[in-house]
Image (cartoon, rainbow, N blue to C red; front, top):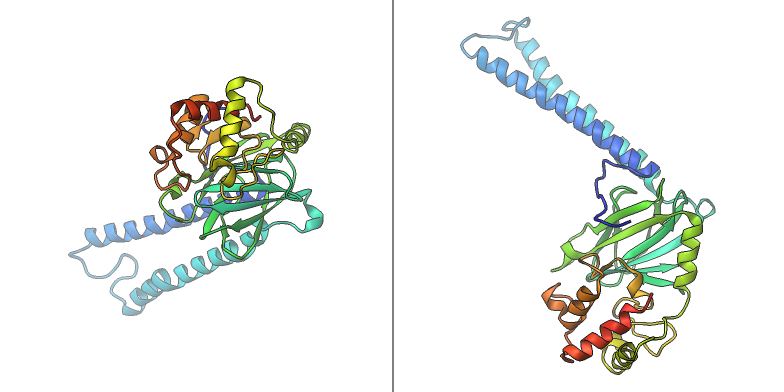
Length: 316
């Protein structure tokens, strides 16, 4: 599951995304035919610029008018109406979430400036910027926003769905095979909109259940003197006011849940890889990596930041 996952909507991995890809190809074909027809008529007009009338039709005013009405009005109306019916009526039904009886579980995703909060049924299990699901399983994804309008989009799995403050929108999340699928906020939501991404990890059901069971456990106790010092600094600083680590006094709700932060593949909503060096850089000076991010610099000094990074690196 390493490397940068693909994000092409033309590489579908669910029935919903297949419908979307099929519609795209049909639209491309129709647009191509219309474009080639327009080019052909332009070329024909240029070749016959000194000759009156049209081939086969001559100078008949009625025939020429019929041609203009057919190609300029009738055909576009029929084509656009057909595309509207398929895309806005048929396709929307095919890509909406199934009923509760047809889904195995639900996942709630909340958009923040600029990260993703992910909670599983009951809300007891929380993670950030990564969504784990069992493959070949119908999931009801409930999309919400904590601040401005965001848009949840995993191109290979389904269409976009808006995340509107005060409103919950539901969509199906389904992957036909195990893999990593990249998602992105598709609605401009502020300075770091481009750096508001996430990954969906579709795993065999047994591996998913193992992952979920691990997420239900409290954060690990630090095992080295430096990590223990880092835990103490974390609890005494503003970190514990913004973040939660299950099993500790840290119960903040402003930033991501960090109970198992070391098990995640990326930091800062898929902006950088989750390595010890990047973790240290991120907590020491988040603005150098993601300008405008709401995590403040604490000015604790390099030694203290190294201790906090050592503590967080053990939370798997």
